[in-house]
Image 1 (tube, rainbow, N blue to C red):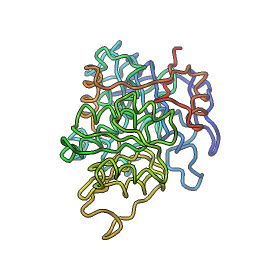
Image 2 (cartoon, rainbow, N blue to C red):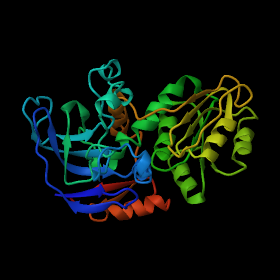
Image 3 (cartoon, rainbow, N blue to C red):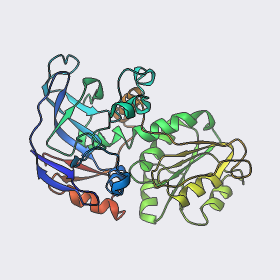
Length: 347
């Protein structure tokens, strides 16, 4: 079968032929219908060799996946051949306290047991077929278009998880700032409009990206530059935002996030751009909560899919065949993807 793999440290993703897997006991084989392209993949492919911790190479990419069940292993009872499903990506041990609550994104045993997410250590979804370690990591799509909704498994779930934590602070009259309006950020704007009473302010680096932010519901769209904090302060009568969500995470955006937060506000650093935010008396507003959330729980993914089923959240997608998948990563690196790029192996 064909697969898109990261094969050598510092290399570019390549389409190659690999053996098609089969489902062993407790496992499920999917015929992949869609796989999302993410900046996390780009991050993995830019880690130097001495810091690389994402399993052995070659690595089949793709931690956002959807497919049709093609084969089930012995003992699998919760899914059947022909089921249309999405993959819950942050795999855990399934036994610790957090996993028992469906929060495998915060599994306390994953590192010790060498468990890695698909596409970020285990073979991922950018292939014609994908092997799933356990049926609990599959969520029914119940009629949702896999191509349009596969990215909700990360680009929807991750901002949903971050936003839910801040909802008590986002009632009527509040302000929420979204930094970075790409794959995750443009979904976050929609989620804030659906879930909160906040005025949503979007920040990004050019007008094309800000146009998408306005299209999906941002009340205000500002350039993410040296004047961004002053602009947010002007919109909030000098008070700042009750919640700031940074989906970039670079040093300059993290600095903006901290400076834009109101007293007792929240700062959620979701992006993995390497920025650090100093926390201490005088370094940030009084009683500001700073978080670094990661992905989300299985139950939250089910909730995100329900929002999509009701038409309350929608991902802007560009589609590519598996053969053209390397071009999607070129466009991603160049900042040209509008919303989320999705690989469709059958195209």
